[in-house]
Image (cartoon, rainbow, N blue to C red; front, side, top):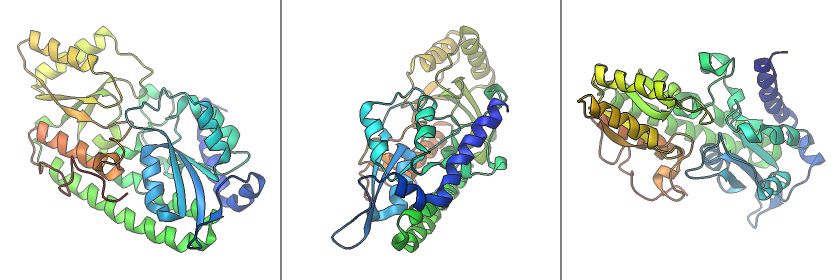
Length: 337
């Protein structure tokens, strides 16, 4: 079996466990499953990334306690588990993770836990036609699926089903919450298409610190060039920088972007290289790639994260978008939580 087939099987195996979640839970009782004063069941959930955790919170409402392991400004490609992470996951009723090798250093532990409790790789719910398989990934899929809201909306179903198996009394609530949230994400996708469509076609070149935006590129007809590869474990060489500088100068790219989870030194090297050739390129803003914004802010939600990125990119590359985004909430507190 090839490595590509092995990882694909592991992801599907994790989702397959959801079919028998009730039985899995009997084998590994955690601290969840208690009744709240109002009579509703409290499910204890661990999510590896904030993007996943935010969707789980939207679907679960007040019927689950959700803990997120990888928070603001932290790179999931390089994240190393702690003892407290192990403890949280061992006590959880269900664990949701991205899969597709995003949580590279955590994957072995997640697979081990899947023998004792439901461990769900949300990336595995997507059809292969939804996934990108870049040439330089050696047969692996690009894990950054949340960059395409239309694709990301599909994970609500597997989350709702998994929670409903653990808490059958809440199943209808989970389904209703998932449907309502999908509508909000579809509205986000429509907004993104509208404002990004105002960027002149010749200017639809997105240069970022690492290659996390290919799903974005597919969804909104952009060309994306990352300095580092899909995983931040890869390093950009001098020739990579020089080639990007040449492209920026030749095509008159007006702005490049830093990311909240990646050091900005390579982006600054691009700007300096372009300046030496007589071309001025600016930092168009900071984008959220592998992590969301600060907890408690609008940008600290999945919808706010994408709204921020879309609005920032459109305005920096010559398009038109409201100062404060789709809902006029950029830069504000998160009213939903």
